[in-house]
Length: 389
Image (spheres, rainbow, N blue to C red):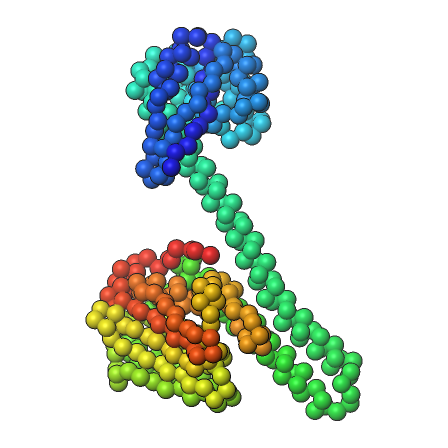
């Protein structure tokens, strides 16, 4: 990738301006960490007034600015740039090199200082350093803008996810308050039950959001010890027994009696709870769920297979993002936070693992999580995970 920066040379000596232009005319610099090759378009100005006029019409990225100029000085040009809040890096050039001059120029906004006389190599080295800083600034500004946009979208979706159940509960409360369903207490049972379901959904959303935030910020405290993953699986199956019974879904376990490796029990619980609860919720009435645990060399494989509604390839491709829920005629009455699979993906990364999905519409889905048994040692010292939302 290449980019051209506009560099302005401001010096009252024409020989100096031409020398700088010759030294940089065919010069390009490369910032390996930014994967950028940078070329330069050179402009000239012999006075501070001419420089400011050119800046207004064709703003440069970098200025090589003589300290002593006829008319307004280089320092006055610096102060004018500061007042205009222009994002320009200035290198002050002067024959009157001194520590006091450098400090004064830096305080006025100069990025660097170059004393006359200088060699072409010294000039290029200074331009290289200034260019690298310029590219870093641009990249940081771009990332900051992207983060603001992501934050805005995240909060917008979060507000929507909380607003809908609140509106439903509020509507039920008005019906209760005004006795709109009649005088029989039993007539209001379904309103109370619907409100409880909505509030449970909001509570799960908040808990999932807290889990996601702790994981991504690196503030989630991990307790790593020898854990029997099969015992965690059986415990999670038992936990979801009531939910499965309501839909007449049977849950079975396939795996060894015991499989121990170093892990965080809470993290494994979150993985199994998300997988099993989704397998039950998105299942057919009277369907089946099979939870399997296998040891495959240096990895542990956790798979949950259901006989549920399944997904198309397009729907599968949308999974694992924040607040992503597959919305169609079959899922419209199924509540969820839209964060469970995103949390699952991040937890699997803590173990150097991954998540995969196989699904067919009306045939069911199989979610498989693979965890590296020896990945915990590498992640124990650094608990943060790259943010990809």
